[in-house]
Image (tube, rainbow, N blue to C red; front, side, top):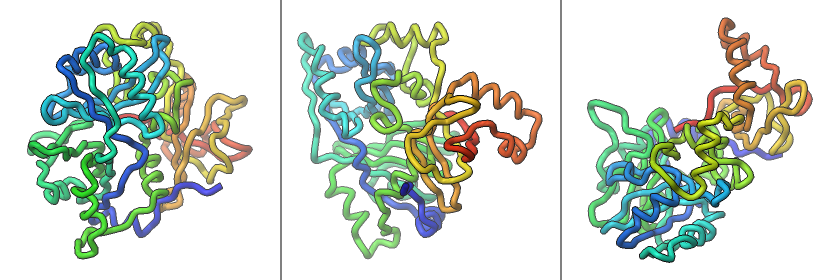
Length: 341
């Protein structure tokens, strides 16, 4: 099978510059209404009071039975509007679900085709914000937080901080604001990134997406909603809260998503991960510029903790060679870390 692959040329470019590419995995919604935040506080898993002009939030919306409908990134927009990013495959379902319980509320929400999400990667990612007259994320005291937000006053142009090492952010805005910085051959940073390389970077970074690595059959807590700062267990009631809280407080989270390393390319995806029996599943994989195979896998927490405990006294090299997890007959798998913000 053909894996998403990061080329050597792109890897070298990212070490010295940056690249901007449209990220079609995500759609942009706008929501407004006089009691919008009050309404959404009862719908999403994260505390909406954490949402400020400088800080976006990650969240999910659930059914009353606690099953995921979609995941969201929420940004404070202009004039008390909210900008909501949701997987494109579930954008219409997200709008329908958020309208479902809004009968007694003044809610206006819909997909905004004029706004798009763009991914920015590379060592000059944060410096490129100057091109858009956006404030920098960085400060002299601390590293920018996950989902720190840079915004243009009185204009729908935003940047979300995703990672610092290596640098990565998202831009949200109109094509006419962003596309010239991608396609102008007179710009020194102009570089064309393939869609398959964008997907490779996402997997290599370890960012699972609803509709790809997980869906409504997997509870969001098993999809690392805690590690990706998408839930608040002290905020009070919301749709699906009872099931989610019970799983958390009673130890019902038995599996998580992990970044893993493979000895060889998988022959199919998804595929079973085995010890002596099937214990998990490799959900996605990509190849980096060093011909290393990195994936996102669903594994039992107890198994991972047991392996980590048994390898504590060993060197990293020995621990990798002694991995007891495989896919297919002999493709060894090594656990790197849980997927996290």
